[in-house]
Image 1 (cartoon, helix red, strand yellow):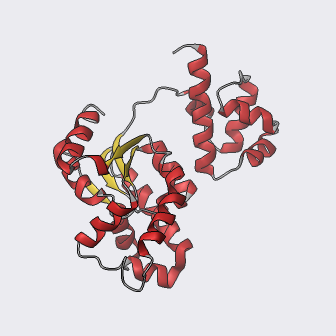
Image 2 (spheres, one colour; image 1 turned 45 degrees about the horizontal axis):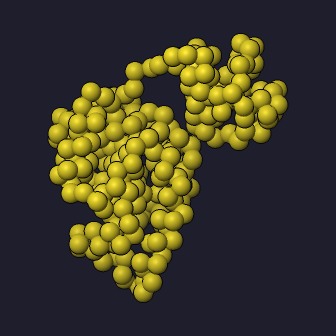
Image 3 (cartoon, rainbow, N blue to C red; image 1 turned 180 degrees about the vertical axis):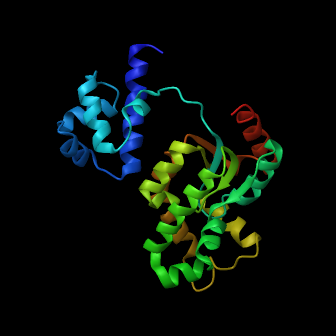
Length: 245
């Protein structure tokens, strides 16, 4: 690792810690006593910060300074599948977990287990904010259980920045990318008629949701174009990619 690589990796660690803390660049600058320009340059890997400035940043973030300098940690072998409903997260996740001989976990199921309620009941009784709180708690529980698993996440996890940042920091994230038409067809093929029930413009709504979330899904470390391959080929490729993770 040369000096520039070190600055870039340090910037990535700073940005990840800030996202997990749910702070904006301006808020981090204010709390650390640094200028917004300093923070921006540091996160971009263009600033050679003094130890004192790094200490100020670590204090503002609530992260030990030594963790910022731990630039080459061993990555946990958790693989998190991300994508819209119908991406194939459950089907591919189970097959991938079997191939890698690791546990398979569905985050939404853990949320239901934690709440003692169905997802529909959670949203009805506690709303979106309640679900997000339970989702974050369920993720932490999964992370505490070990460093080897395949995790299928809910399609909207990207709409919770702190939880999504935490996921990216602790897992190898894989976006299972597909067209809106493929998402729609797969859900219907599974016998789920909800996309059509009472929604005459369901496919248009699905396209709009996908268009909004795509920039967020694209933050995943890996992208798999599921519309261009078979489930068997996708699982084989992912298993080979993560065999030594």
